[in-house]
Image (cartoon, rainbow, N blue to C red; front, side, top):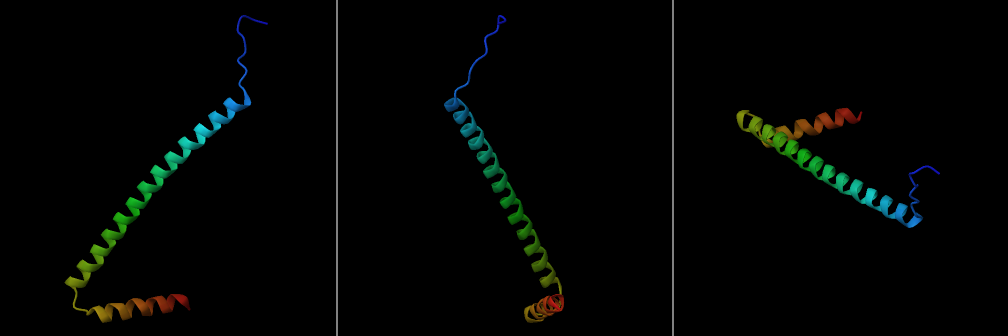
Length: 78
């Protein structure tokens, strides 16, 4: 053999490495999922504000707006 000896990695060590890789991937996934949920919530809050601002600026009642939205949804279902 040459001057460099090969290091034999045991099955247990390979399992520990794989477990560590999975734990790191899960932590990264959890962090990314948390960020996604925060961004989606922020977008929903912005949409809610936009709708509320339009409602206050307009001359339609809440009932008229709800009726309009429901009619659009019914049309889309056809």
